[in-house]
Image (cartoon, rainbow, N blue to C red; front, side, top):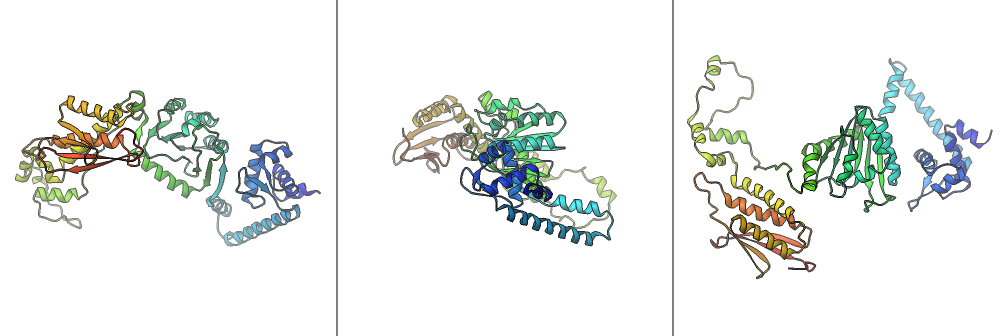
Length: 458
């Protein structure tokens, strides 16, 4: 019997045995060179090398492209014998511990299935091949996180067809991504049964299949149209890890925006995503109790049922409640709801939409002029800018005091300016926006635009 027969008896496949023999005779070679020597494809060679690395028979270098080696054939066989001896020892030990219990085979199988497995995939083609395999083998669900450009890569691989086939078979498939004007058209290649949502916070990529297998990207090529040779991903077969990843994705999914709404930013040139307003943190139950002047404490335990009290509840409206009903907007402050803050948040959104509408204007001065012209045309107040002591926009608004039942429109107006400037100038860009509140009646506030030396036109 030759080396190939011994390696086969030790548990290696024919391809793996051929690879070990080739590497032991010619160490430190590339996967493409090994494939050529074995007369197979580079993908087949990588698949064999992946398992051989996992069991410790093959090592690789960290340079690019990776080079692979194997110990001399005699040492390799000794290592396989040691592995088999250790496996047999574990089997005997487990058997002795479980021989007195029912369903021994089921228990051993369950223990083996719970053991986590992982591997590192290199290059985009191999990662997408694994995603294709996951789509083919999925039985219940598939969650894909595509970041900004993942849909572009997916649509250029056979994995897309397999994902669409899975969706048609009834597999629940969801896609979480960050839409981009350059890639939005590719989402039309997905099956209509696949739900897509957008999140500005998604820039990573990954896949979770049936809560048991996960792909987590470790590195992605900066060039979205490149071949992805530097792409790398971790493949983990673990239900515990898959569950933790899915919980994270679900949290983002709940706050994400549906594809139809988010895509309008690129198809209709409008921002129509839901606006989520925030309130101060507090116990609203305690605030309600204070407003309604409820002194009695809530019981810690169940109290005896009182039929008379039950029948009387709801029949009377307290004076405090009547006062709230007639209080108008002012009553909101009783619950800790700052209407000025809400109006400012709405103004921020309007300002963001205004900046989005003027996004084609490149120059800073030109943008500010157009914004101020729109402001004057809308009759929202008076804006002007000056360069001393530094470039700033001066804002003249009405009174900032809330009187009677009036809406604090000054907060809305100021929020529009703030939202427009913050949307135009990102915190890490060439212009920093700094707001200053003034007591001067002629100048409600000013926004300082602090320029870096790279700013070209202010």
